[in-house]
Length: 335
Image 1 (tube, helix red, strand yellow):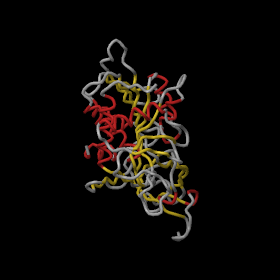
Image 2 (cartoon, one colour):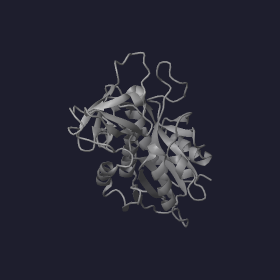
Image 3 (cartoon, helix red, strand yellow):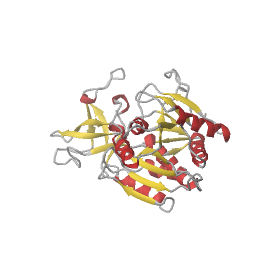
Image 4 (cartoon, one colour):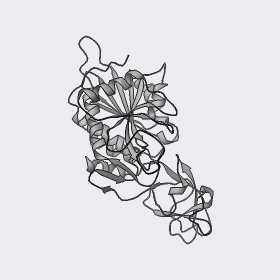
């Protein structure tokens, strides 16, 4: 599974330009599902048909993992070929200086700052630029409107993985592996690889409207409180996937939370409960689709979210797959 994660993390796919990620995922799930389609916004929607539950029809269970990653868009090229930019998604300026950026055409560069940056200076995006090695505006290999993403080397640290864009290629990898290991289910499983999550959960909202799920679940990363002087949070690497209770945009449906917790305890899978004070996931958009959907999230603890390099624990990744496979193998009763 680590090789799958590596390939997913190395694919260019900022918000609104997820095509290459979608192609890779389509190849990976070929033969694992019964139907695949792409909707108007670019969401990849895969259906693994269920067997039903006796005389009851199969429930529609939608599991969403977003394909897009944060990045920067070129807004101006000056006479010397330096690029000014704006953010695409929530970008942290203090993580940019000296980091590598990759554009769709393969061009690369690094982030610099006006003047002489001081270690104590708080960086402002308006005072930053991208250096692509150009000597003039005409020499610049990219222009206004081109989008760059952060790139660093994938590193297998044994128990931990260090890589770019784990938010949320790790969720995509877990969903792919779940489809591979799920032999059968009484439920119709809609595995939806969504677009534009980082700029407002846009893909999940439209996909849920089309799927009309009975239950919805987001797979995404979450913050941790296990680093020195970290914000207080009872989530840590290596202690299992986190079952969401609340974040800034949603309260997880108690039935969905109970369903995941019961499955974890029944199969002796470690888990944590997540109360996230910052950010949200595709679950918030799915929850509000049509007349409302019971929704929740299974989160993968991650350090350094929204930076050029992120870290997850491989045991948490594998236990996320185990939890999903076991939870989906039986009836889903959340009401």
